[in-house]
Amino acid sequence: MKEKIQFTLNGKQVEVEVEGDQTLLWVLRTNFNLTGTKYGCGLGYCGSCTVLMDDDPVRSCGIFMEDVSGTHIVTIEGLAKKGELHPVQQAFVDHDALQCGFCTPGMILNAVGLLNRNPEPSRQDIIDGMEDNLCRCGAHNRIIDAVASASKVMKGELQK
Image (tube, rainbow, N blue to C red; front, top):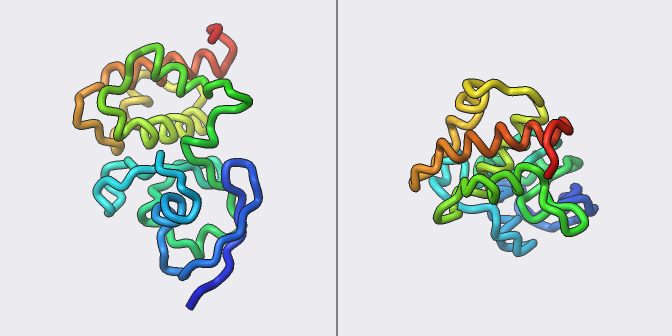
């Protein structure tokens, strides 16, 4: 049975009529044409579909739309503000922390969630926090460096 779901998407109030058992991943991609959120494994293991829900990273492939009602969702398309990349996005560029780019949106949103919870992570905190997002290209060391750099920018210790 279709139901109307209202939530905030990238800072804007939206409403969509969907089956309650549809996943957030597919609604983002098909109803809102936000294709930065990637389908990877479909089981919540790889992290390619990570978005922020109420500032926490979640796997959108495992979130049903009935659980999205009233929440704030941020996708990679909504992270930059006024044409300026988020510090984590900029750090990924600066540290060449991407290769094919498939995992990058999920990596970035997971890193933003990590830094929201822990603004001063140690290298081990970053490794542990990013462990469940998989990169097949092997850019892990550059990703760790990018997250560490972004944490300093977000705290005002480094200039963008």
